[in-house]
Length: 409
Length: 208
Image 1: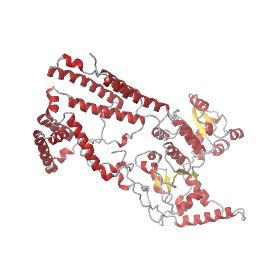
Image 2: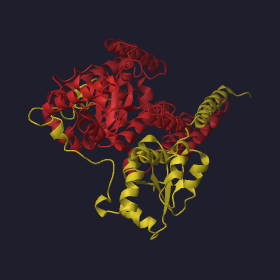
Image 3: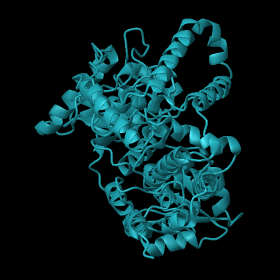
Image 4: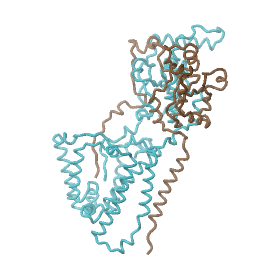
C-alpha cells in the first residue's frame, strides 16, 4: 500500500486488513492458474510443463523493466527500494534445501497453502513439514546462527558484482528469458508429443517478444535517469528566482527570531560539521549542501509547515546561496538565505551605530535601540534556547517499512 | 486458418502507450543539462576558486589561458572592469548567445566575477546545470576587492581572499551557552524522528 499509507490516505493500522485482501486475491490467482496442482511445479523438473518457470520469469522481467522505466522517468527513488541482504552461505544452503523440497513435494510455500486450502492432502502434509522445519530452525537457531549470518555481503546488485551496467544486465536477462520461453515451449511439445495442428492453432508470441526486445534495447541507449524530472523548478525559472531578492532574510529579522525563539524559524548551517561544532547560531541545524537532496532530510524539506522559514547560512553568502539554489531546483518550499551570512550578520549587529544619525527619525531610533538590546542579549548568552523544539511526529516511508518478512509466492 | 490476433494488438497498444509517455516526457524537459545530484557533486569536485595571484598573473599578460567574464550590469561594466574581461550580465546569463560565447571559449577557462562572490558562484552553478564544461572558475571576493588586492596594490597576503571565511571570533560575541560551548549540536530538525535511521530491520527474506 506504498503510496496510500505514507500520504495519510489510509490508516496504517488497516495494513493487516489490506494484507489479507491482497493475500486472498493472490491465492485466488494462483489457484486459477492451476498452481494448486503439484504437477505444475514438478513439471519443470520433468520437462512436461514449464508454466511455473514462465510465470516467474515474466514476473521478474516485468518488475525489472517497470523499475527501469520508473527510475528513468524519475518517478521512483531507487534508494528507497528494499533489497534483500545477502548472506552467502545461508543463501546457497537455503536455496538447495528449498529446491530439493520443491522437487520432493511439488509445491512452493505459497502454492502449498493454496493447495491445502482447496483440500489437497499432500499439500497439507507439505505445510506440516514446513512448520516442523520452521520449528527446528527456530528452536536450534543458536546452533545455526554462525552459519546463518556468515559472510554478509550487504545489499549488492548482481550487475554491480558482475561489473556491468544496469541496462546491459537487464538486456541480457530479457534475452535469456525470451530464449527460455521459446526453448521450454519446444521441450514441452517434444515431451508431451503435442500434435502439430495444436501447435499451429496457438497464437504467435512473435510480436510481443519483438516489442519486448526493442524496449529493452532502447534502455541500453537511454541514461539511467533523466537529467531533470517534472517536479523540479525549470532552469529559466531558477535563473529568475536567483535574480529576485525575496529569498534574503536580513540580520535584524534573524536576530529577532533567534531571541524570541521562533519555532518556525529554522536556521540551517551549510558549513562543514567541524566548523559547525566550533560555532553555530543558537538553535541551528547542520545540513551541508551534499546532504540537502539526501534521504535523511527529505521529509523535512518536502513538507514545510505554513509560515515557517528555513534559512541557509554560511560564513559568507556564497555557500548558503549554492545550497539555496540546489534546494530551489528541487522545488523545496519556504527556503531563505541569511543576507551576508555570519560575517554580514555580525557586522550589522556588533559594528553598527550606537546612536541614530538622525535623532528625529523614529524608525532609525527603534532600529538602533533593538540592535543595542540584541547585542547585549547575545553577549550575555540570553539567546540560548531554553528548551529544544518538540519533535512533531510525521510518518515517513522509512518508518513504516515493515521489519523483515518480505515474501515471494 | 484464422489465428487469434488479440495478443498482438494488445502488446502493440501497450508498448506504443509507454513510448508516447516517454516521448511526451522528453519534450517537457526543464532544459537542464545535468541532474541536480550531478551538479552538487561537481560543485566542489575541482579547485575552482581563482585566487588573486592567478588573476594578477593573468592581467599582467603572462598568460592568456583565461576568459574573464564580468557578470555585473552593462552600466557597471562601462564604469570600470578588469582589463580583458567581457560583459555578460547575470540576468542574461542563460541567453543562447551568451551560452554560446562560453561554449566557444575553446582552450580558455572561463573565469567569473561579479559585484558579489555569491553571484559568481550561483552563475557557475547555473552554467553547470546547463551542462557546460566543468572547468569554470570564480574569482574570490567581489569586483572591488579583486581590483584593490589584485590590480591596484597586489598583496600576496590577500591572494586567497574569499567569501567563505570566518571574519570574527564568533564565540566572543555570541554566547551560545554560559560555558561558552555551543549547547546543541547537530540536532535533528523538528519533524524528523530521531531514531529514524537507526531503526533495525531484521533480515528475514521470504520467497518461494
